[in-house]
Image (cartoon, rainbow over all chains, first blue to last red; front, top):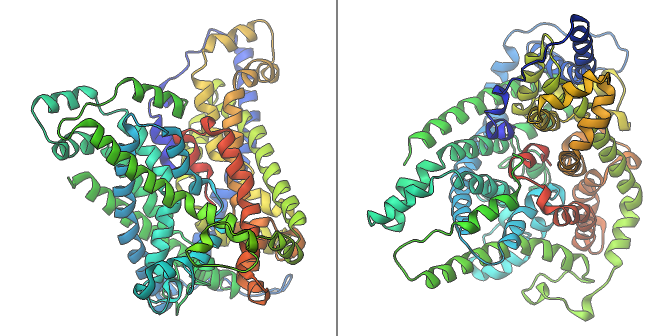
Length: 314
Length: 299
């Protein structure tokens, strides 16, 4: 992800000045350079570049799974896969579901993460404990945390017991309106600790003098936040918005397990889930590849839009 | 990036902010209460996972959130073990994770050293590849990799098929490169003048210096395959090849309805899956740095 790359923009610029060496040494170092980097290059081409090109190629063919060894024809179909995906109600609904997810998840993530980071940034007791606590869901397997959410939000689970007469009917995970929002809350909970850490790091870069100057000017707490903190952490906000858009648009485990296969009635099916169903379960790989390409375009557009909003918003 | 959380903390502690407005102690109490509530929301599901895994009868009432000696059992653990063979699943998870960690450390160190210290044509392109890989989500590669590895090369239900897409973590290459870049060039030049070969320099100078970074990379890389669900789920159909995350997920979606206390068994499995990573994270907390961890975790 872009996290690490953004954290250290300067390091790439540092070029080592080569000491004077004989041409033979230079040649030797070049050979070792190629030797050492070659496993990575092979991996990049085999696991990344070639499959990526293959996916795009496949999306223009009627590429389906056949029995091993069978000689089948997989004709070129132009944009057929794309046009049928764009008119497929199942695909369209999955993109609508992602939009519902993002509308809830992204603002919630930003607000909670900056709030917790500011609270943690002050001199408070047990800071290590708090930071660890917020981070534990992030490092734990989705499958494990989903198990306990399934229990908490089941029809006679603890959450419904606590809500009593306010408990939704049908219960959260099988409710067409609430299934996707529940997933959005789950993902916010799961990922938040990481974003809190990003904001904590960003808060270290806000110049202390600005706070002091604002204090002399008699700025209230909210004004300080709006005029000093928020502009100061804007790069982090942009990064967090982009990351949460990318993660949120690529959900699979959550609709598969938490809502029992994108249910109810496809109300929580995501594009990756549909891609799995069509491509792997039904063997229509060309069609699934087209959905994948559409998803990448969708993510790029939403991420740019979100970046634009977060850079202009106050 | 190499700035650890503790360093950040020390910096913060040294310069406490002095906000105007309400009295300081009052505000810090409000802050502490908010943080405590937050921590409760974050930790309660883990506590509830453990309690639920030990209940003989699932008790979803508020009282059920407290341990009740009359309702405690370890039977759920033997139940889940009877359904998905915990040991076998743990061994599969272990092989998958260990292979990914080992291969990432080995090839990642070589690539990172090469990208930082050695000079050759095409080095910039190889590094651009490192950055590019980190921006594309794995889900996009799912279909072509499935077609290639499982359908064409017949690697379904093999460890190799599980491991290959994660064999070299781009994050690890990146972290190693950044680390080697900040070491003084003279260190390597001096060794070369003494006639040391690149392998010897890597083994005797670069790796010993990189030990703390190697620990961080090991931890961050460990979490990825241990938690990974999607890819091993696609690759493994045979139960005796599935890592724990996959066999537990299959239990949740297929078999749970047949068990007497399905949630008890599910939560017992979840505890076994979560425990190693949570324990590692708590023990080595200070080695997880904010910027390093992000890309390692995709589970």
